[in-house]
Amino acid sequence: MFFGMQTRRSHGVVLNLNNQYTPAADDWIARSLRAVWHPCTQMKHHERTPLVPIARGKGPWLYDHQGNRYLDAISSWWVNLFGHANPDINAALKDQLDTLEHAMLAGCTHEPAVLLAERLNALTHNTLGHAFFASDGASAVEIALKMSFHFWRNSGRAEKREFACLANSYHGETIGALGVTDVALFKDAYDPLIRNAHVVTSPDARNAREGETPRDVAQRALADMKTLFDAKASQLAAVIVEPLVQCAAGMAMHDPSYLKGLRALCDDYGVHLIADEIAVGCGRTGTFFACEQAGIWPDFICLSKGISGGYLPLSIVLTRDEIYAAFYDDDMTRGFLHSHSYTGNPLACRAALATLDLFDTANVIEVNHRKSAFLRAALSPLHDHTQVKNVRQQGTIFAFDAVIKDPLQARTFSRRFFENALKQELLLRPIGTTVYLMPPYILSDDELKLLAERTLSVFDATLAEAA
Image 1: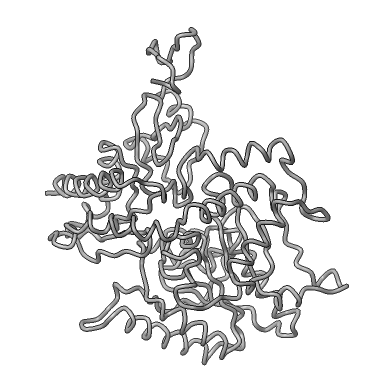
Image 2: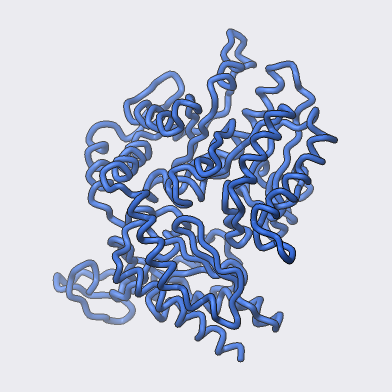
């Protein structure tokens, strides 16, 4: 079946019953490799690892042109919260298309942007009262960094222009975001262009010494941050963290006490706290905002990915009224002049509003707790697996690390696991030797069971290749 029609293959094309020809899957792959430069990819690797040509999506499943299906167990790079072709989000976007597709937000305004800013402010209990819109996560990080720097300059503290980040942190790949990223693979090639941040110890619970708890690891990391603040607070504008989970670091999870202690340090030393909730917000960690689990609010929250339900590019920086007030002046140069052509796009904002509606009507946070417990139980055999360590969970994020002694097998583990997963109808992309699941929130119990069982099967099959 191809888009619901009966088909037959003929000379590299697909012929439907109306005698209309459409390119076959292998043709789409060849054309893509000729014309499209794919993200986060060494293109030469696709000589041996074929692209997956996606024709359509429905619920948690993606389908190729031959009707093969793949459970989107990583939410299409962590963005798809309520499934593909979600009827509620679809309906909202169709309605918005007939009303307003786009209008510049400089000098104009429109209902979707206003309503979205108001609802997000309410979700922070009116703590972060102003929303600045952009289109992707890295842009949101750039905005927060610039806002912090510019705030201090407008406040007569122009010397506060440096930033701090955690070891192994990832905050995006634009130049400013790379400055607060500590992943060599992404930033070393561009080092001459980058203004590097201070890198401090991560509270990653996997760093626990014998007898230590995750809270102990957090306290050690806070001590390192305090040492930096003692030396550099007068020059530091802000520190940026991914609350609870450093995703690109291999789903490195930390105790909420770290965030509470960091908020106190920032208050004591006069340093802004930027929470990068691009991947961990919107319910991923068990609360709508990850920071809620520490009982704190940062000075800036960066949102993207799931905020639009995975439909359209959208990012948002939420910040406090007092930060906004430092830019409010007759002097144009004291204003925040950052801009994007599609800032506050009505379609993207409407998708986000429909996404927030689903959180309200479907009691998503509470339901996710039950589903997460179900999946945790289904994955329990991992705890006794001799080649598994650091089984961990935070909200709807599950991860474990493969124990592979051979360096070559370790280097190829992610690719081989990905290929084996496709054979078992799963879309999974490990980070190095870390296998993680970050599925949409809509999986049924049967689909959760399938995901767990096949993940275990794929893992064993991939290890067997290395034997």
